[in-house]
Image 1 (cartoon, rainbow, N blue to C red):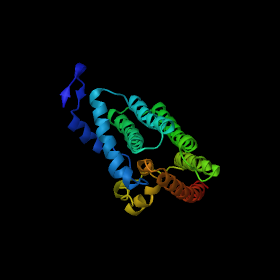
Image 2: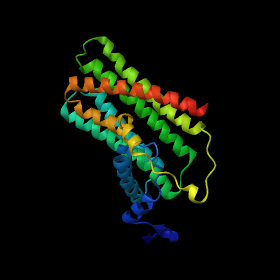
Image 3: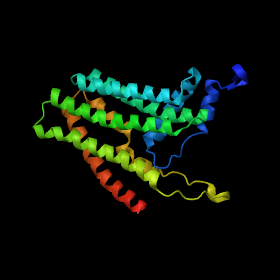
Image 4: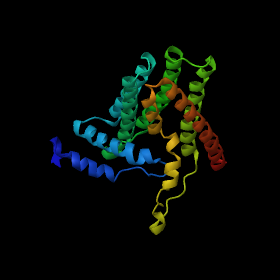
Length: 246
């Protein structure tokens, strides 16, 4: 820990990491990947961003740059193993920075509606753009059994957008319970079974799908299978959210 200009305390990298460990969001409703891979990676990136003086909004824009760079590569280049690694790396690093911006905001005490809005806008752009890029790649580079397969990215995009927006709106509209006091205030431990069950619809797991891009037939089959899983989860979540809000 050091003292900067004006007497402000500047944390070391290790100090920032310690502070960030105590400023984590609840693990409830979070998959194992996000809990044990993405959030810890985002914590390191947030500490690094703090040390070099980035703001949370700048970290959000870094996330967007990595994600949209990967999307552009997917749309412009033909399937290959180098492209597979590049797309996966761009998406997964973008996802980690997406976790880092919120963690940095909590460390600095700078959370704001504008920052949350920007984060969600980037998330929405990322979700729609990646499936649009898959559609372009299918059309330009894949030997599809029929033109009907071009509907798969459109369907996947719809399912992914509805999961994102539906969950976001359900969380915002759900009545908040009054804060508990005393022993009742301790939150129950998050369910590990639920964390495992959420893996198929975790964005980090979706990113792993692109490591198969070097084998177009494998990618087509895996992408279509994951779309079917998303559709099943979407149906279940829509019923759950509607019942909770009703």
